[in-house]
Length: 410
Image 1 (tube, rainbow, N blue to C red):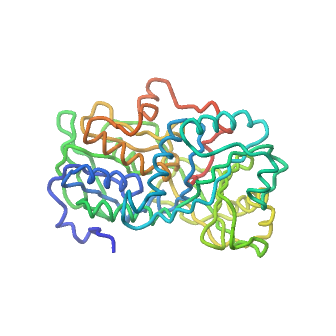
Image 2: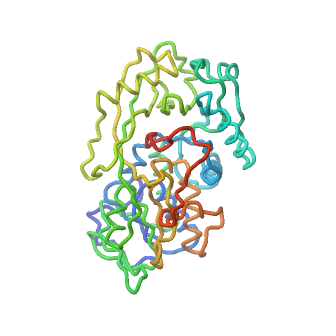
Image 3: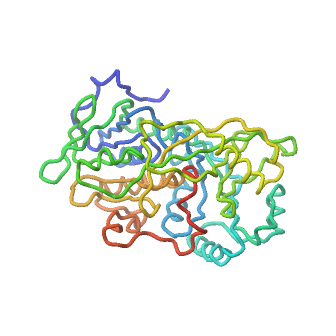
């Protein structure tokens, strides 16, 4: 059983904490674990509902290093080591990591971009390479390949169980002294003289000098009263599950795939189904009134693009689906930064649903920043919030089309 304090235990809410993390998703709990590991004696997480109630619990949880930029590649590479060495690095629970191999498929005209991205990833230490059409058939016999000349193959990548990963971090954080309060919404960050002095919750106020806002689609509720407008937009997206037809060998299933031709991602779900995201996301939604169901239109789109890449799924049975929400920044890339002009406040937001795979490393970087004054694991300058006010949005020159239209869980 997870060591979590619910709303009925509000009397246990501490009056003071060394650090307060707002948000019980994978980033917030990973950061809480790393903060506790630094030796802070009183780390507190407050979550508005249950752990994983936002994007984390709905994530497809792909774990791959293939990005069109070095910073996110490095974050994933550092995180991959934690996924693969979980017992030694975290020691509680299991992420359910399945390193079944990953394929990035692109249109023929994007081959130069793919080759450039793979070269950057190889230089960073990622085990990956470019494969041709014949290689593709050997790597994944179920693939349709006539519309793709090359792809990137990452043999040690795969996917994980998003909730199991989150619960493992939560257990590890609690074992090192952190306290997690679910059903305890944060109402505001309290400031005095331009610096953090506390967090007001529905169960009382916690005095603290360090706060991390990792509140996903609810971040604006906390940022706006502080005068912080980062152009963040909550977005709704949908995913579907299809049962494997008889022609799919259950002993091997299929690889994890991101298909830039058909604008979709897919991976096995359990031992007899496939999870796929294909619908274009819908922005400017109210996360407190989210329709968690999947629409007939989204099901039809998912079936079409799944069969377009894996034709054996043409008559596959739909077995379920859901909708989730994530927070998108104006350029679609994460914001990981100390809040401008507010001492003691850090932000992780606007990730467009891609931060599951990078969360272990993000947690390390934020803990270092909050306790030592700067992140040591890697340079987070590209993730700075000021890029928007400086007129320097983050644009990937080697992206495959508009990467921001893809779905939350990739």
